[in-house]
Structure formats: C-alpha cells, structure tokens
Amino acid sequence: MAGESGVDPKKVPCVTLSTGEKIPCIGMGTFGSDRYSPPEVSAAAAGAIRFGYRLFDCASVYGNEDLIGRVFSGAFTSGIVKREELFIISKVWNDMHGKGDVLLSLAGTLKNLAIDYADLYLVHWPFPNYHAPGCDGDARNPNSVPFSADGFMDVWAQMEKIARMKLARYIGMSNMTVPKLKAVLPRCRIRPAFIEMEQHPSFQQQELFDYCVKEGIQVIGYCPLGSPNRPERDKTPEDAVDMELPETAAIASSRGIHPAQVCLKWAVRRGSIPIPFSVHEKNYKSNLLAVMEDPLTDAEMEAMKKDERNCRLVKGQVFLWPGAKSWKDLWDEDGKIWGT
Ligand SMILES: NC(=O)c1ccc[n+]([C@@H]2O[C@H](COP(=O)([O-])OP(=O)(O)OC[C@H]3O[C@@H](n4cnc5c(N)ncnc54)[C@H](OP(=O)(O)O)[C@@H]3O)[C@@H](O)[C@H]2O)c1
Image: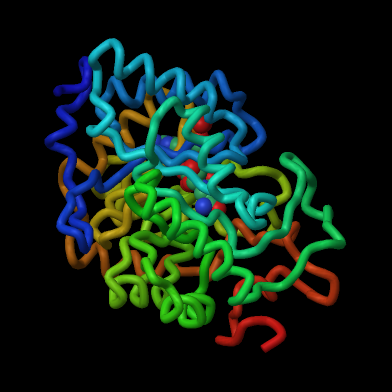
C-alpha cells in the first residue's frame, strides 16, 4: 500500500537477509535522546508510517513504547499498514538479564507496542550494568561487572527461547566487538541474525562490519548522522561532527543535497541499515527519500573512507565497573576482552 502522500514503501530498496527475506534498507530510530518527549517521538513515528517508513528501532529503555504502540495499532486499524508489513525491533535493557527476565521484558514490550511478536529482539548491551535513565556521564553503579561470556550466554539462552516460542522472528545483539563475538558465536544454538552497532562516517567500524558480513549477520547502524542531539553525557569536546566532515560536506555540496543525505546514502550503499531519528517531518522525509535515488558512486564511496576519525560517540562510560579505567575498557580496542 502506498504511504499517504508519501513514497510507495515497495519502492524503498531492500536488503536481503541470510534467510532470503527482504526488509527495508532504512528505518527510523525512536530514542528521544533525553530531549524529545514520548508524544513528540510517537507523533514522528505516526508521520513516518504515513510517509512510507516500514522499519522502526524501539527499546524498552527509551520509555516511549506505550505511545508508539498506540501509533502502530492506529495504523493497523485505519488500514494504513498491516502488521506483517512492519519490521519492528526492540531490545532488552541491562537490568533485565537475570533468569526469566528476558521473557518478562519482551512481554512488557509486546504489551506496550500492542503487537504479539517482535520482528527482531536485541540484547541492548552485553553487560548487566544498570544506570538510571537520564543520568549524567559521571554516574557509576558499584554493582557493575565486566563482560563475561558465561553471563552473556545465560542471557542468550533466554533469547533463543523466545525465538523458539516465536515471540521474536529474529534475535540479535548490540554494542558488540569482534573479540566478544568470537567468544560467543561458537556457543550460540541460534545465531544472531543482526548486530546493531554505532556507525557513521567518522566511525565506520570497518573491522567489525567486515566480520559481521563474513559471518552472514546483517548490520544495523545507529547514530548514522553522528547524533548531533545526543544526550550531554555522550558529548566530549574532541568528538567529530559528521555532517561537517570534509568528504561528506564536499559530496553534499557537489550534489546540492544535505550532508545528512550523504551519510545515509553511504550507509545504504555499504549494506548497513541506518536508523536515523528526527521528530521533524522535513528531516525524516528527506532521510527516506535520500536512499531511494542516486546512490553514491564508487569514487564517492572511496572518498568517504577519508572521513574516518575513529570517533565513537556512545562511549558507554556509565556502564564501567570498579577497576576499569576508561570507557575504552568496554570496547576491547587491543583485541582482548578486559580482564582476559
Ligand atoms: N543500540 C544502541 O545502543 C543505540 C544507541 C543509540 C541510538 N540507537 C538508535 O539509533 C537511532 C538513531 O540514533 P540517534 O538518534 O542518536 O542519531 P542520528 O540519527 O545520527 O541523529 C539524529 C539527529 O539528527 C538530526 N537529523 C535527522 N535527520 C536530519 C536531516 N535530514 N538533516 C539534518 N539533521 C537531521 C535530528 O535532529 P532534529 O530532530 O532536529 O531533526 C536528530 O536529533 C536512535 O533513535 C535509536 O533508535 C541505538
């Protein structure tokens, strides 16, 4: 069905999963970044469905699934879209890693989103380390612990159970690294179909991206525009501004388009699924339109490599455990998992 005065969702390019299923090459994020209220985010989701978006990235910790659920049910009852035409993602938060908790968390999400299955359910972070929503960057929880493959596999076994119960069509992981994936993939009975990771021109994560491709895992890229309105705790003075990077800006200027559109064309041409967020109609519309025409050329893709700055924005420092020195300890930058 065509989106109301929008694009025909069937004309949005697709990615093909290892199962052969085709899903949209772009989706919409729904994290209000502690700055946009649930009514603002859900109103944008409603407008996005009408315009032709069919993939939505939700999470219990975003605190807005109940209002987004009302948007979904409204869209189903008014006939704008059928349930099976949407690809709905949600995630289990770090405080729900205990025994039996994953099913409980998913049940709450399904109730809030007013659906009876998720298309994809992700482990949001590979740590059971809780921080209060909206906390500042210096907040630490003394009960935080480093990554443990055994601990993670206990959570993953619960994820496999919900997949077997068909409460989630696919399961996946988020905020992983190559060393962590190497530690857990051989132990999975049901492998992750997706990995969600931070990905934008100044933080391309080429090694992790290539690893996922090699393993047949579809990548979803978060903060695809460099998250200019991210929470204050995720900002440091040395962070790059993606939409002002030289190659990104030069390609935008030569094509007469906004740098946001360059970031999204780059992500899609690379084979990742970007999930940009905006509450502004003009922006979320132009984001979808960007990936429907005029992909970047080979030369432009090559040039975009020069915008890499190894600039991680979501550093995760609030998840640090006693004994860890810096946020880098979360990300296995020397190729080893902390403490191993
Ligand atoms: N798995 C995880 O741990 C994780 C972590 C972070 C994020 N995520 C997901 O990824 C999604 C996207 O990340 P994000 O929201 O942090 O970053 P983002 O999509 O890179 O940036 C969003 C910001 O860019 C601006 N923007 C959007 N479209 C624009 C356009 N066409 N032109 C100019 N500015 C534009 C928006 O400002 P305006 O509102 O002013 O338009 C918005 O605040 C989240 O909503 C969430 O679903 C997942």
